[in-house]
Length: 153
Image 1 (spheres, rainbow, N blue to C red):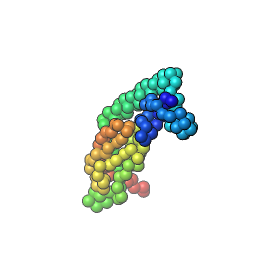
Image 2: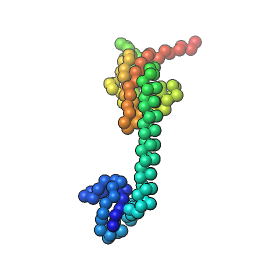
Image 3: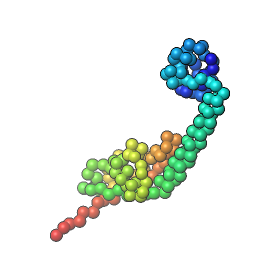
Image 4: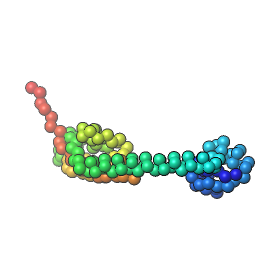
C-alpha cells in the first residue's frame, strides 16, 4: 500500500514522502494515528497544493518580519530609570521595560523575544537583540537616561 507520510516516522521516511508499506502497518497503525494518509492521486495533488500554499505563507511571514526588522533597527529606544550615586540604576533595565518602550513607538514585541546583550545597570547606550521571526533577528540601540523627578510644593 502506498501512503503519504504526514510526519517523520523513524525507519520509514520523512514528512511528505510517498512510501510503500505493508497493508496492516498502514491501516492499523499509521493511518489511525494520523501519521500517514492513503496515497491516492487526489490525495497526492491535495498534499502538494497544501505544501505550496504553506510555503507561500511562510515566505510572506518571513518577508513581513524582515520589513519589521529594518523598521526596528532604525529606532533608538529611550528608557528612563531612577539613578543613585555614580549614575547607577536602582535595579536594572529588563526586557519588559524594552517591550514597553517599543509599545510607545507602536511596535508590539513580546518580552521573551528581547535579549539584552549585557546587564544594564548604569546610564548609557546599549544594544539589544530582537527576534522577530525564527529566522530573522535584528539589533536595536537602547539609551538609558535618568528619570527626572518633579518636586511638588
